[in-house]
Length: 269
Ligand code: DGL
Image (cartoon, rainbow, N blue to C red; front, top):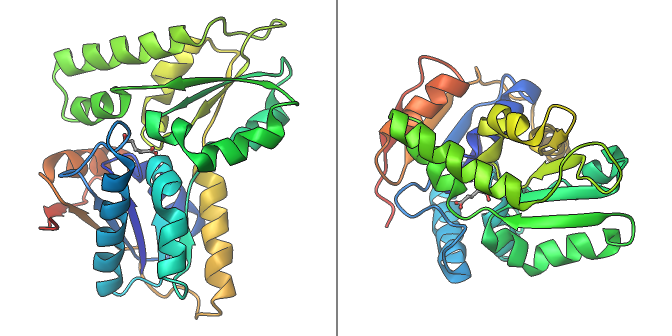
């Protein structure tokens, strides 16, 4: 079984890709909904949650952990790896290099949380690429929360989500394929692929959106192969747990993964 976690429903976008890559693998997905979103909180909070969740999932017997959250990866993955050297831990980070390979205008927009963009890990990722393109960074305050709120959504929650997304996309400046325009947009938070259609409409159809689901899933498969463990013999079972109310997680999983999934709440203070 592989453990996958995020502050909420965002990591389901990574789980979608993991299921495509590893269809027989069993997964346990933990949404830290009682303690998220993470992006505008303190780094120490996100690190403490990462430690708590890793202990919990280890207790459930996971053979690998996917931190399906850019923010938690930036804040905690190095600590987790040194504290759990025997556990393969796979993280996600904004797809700057794939974006560079796609961009012709050499102007790339990056949408991510405030904590991700302020992290040392992100600075180290960006630094060697700065000479090759201009990266326009946008801390999307409120966007992950608006996506969470829209899942079981009232019309008002949908309207609020669109207004929030629109504000952040507009703040990037001109988008398009002309010179000096942003032609590639990195979705640097695992929540954002769920509004890819809305973002595409706001950015324009010529702009290329890049997320990290497929590469993370491939990397997970190769890490499992390194373990020399027997090939997954599960049936692709997915267990969904939330540290807060489970309705949003269940609704999101039914919409984006499979219509018969069930989510429950786990106490994990
Ligand atoms: N889905 C997350 C990420 O990839 C976290 C968003 C949040 O909790 O603010 O960054």
